[in-house]
Structures are given as C-alpha cells and as structure tokens.
Length: 65
Image 1 (cartoon, rainbow, N blue to C red):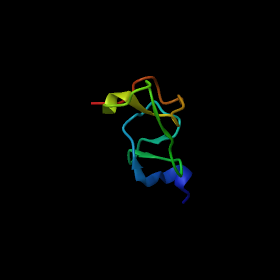
Image 2: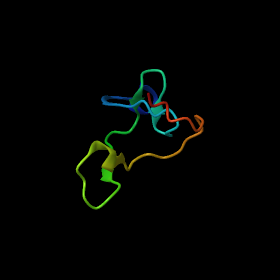
Image 3: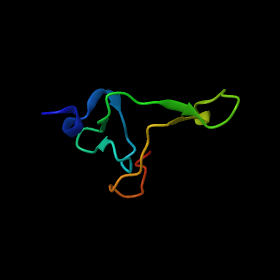
Image 4: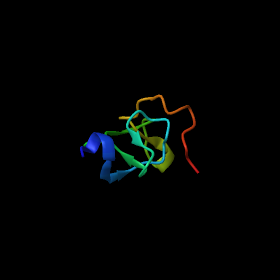
C-alpha cells in the first residue's frame, strides 16, 4: 500500500481537518511537510505552523486536544 493511503510514520498529525490527514493512524500522508512562522519574531511554539496544511473534506474540527 502506498504512503498516500497509509500515511507517513515519520509525521504524526492530530489535525483531522487537513486534506493530508490519515485518521486511521493519525499520520500525514505527505512525504514531507513545510513548517512556517506566523510572525516575524519566533520565540514560542505558537508562532509556528504547518505550512503544508490544506483544508480537506474531513470537516472543520482540527482535532487538537
């Protein structure tokens, strides 16, 4: 089976609304992701984001806890 179906075991993901999310095993189906920043001066985790995120048809809940 391909990574697009099973997910990438190196990229864990709990954001179920992403088009690349595999809800069965909470993995990203992309080969790699791009991490970006949300502001000029990054000093906290909250200042970063997954720039590879694309809204999918899984709903609008991020699935974050």
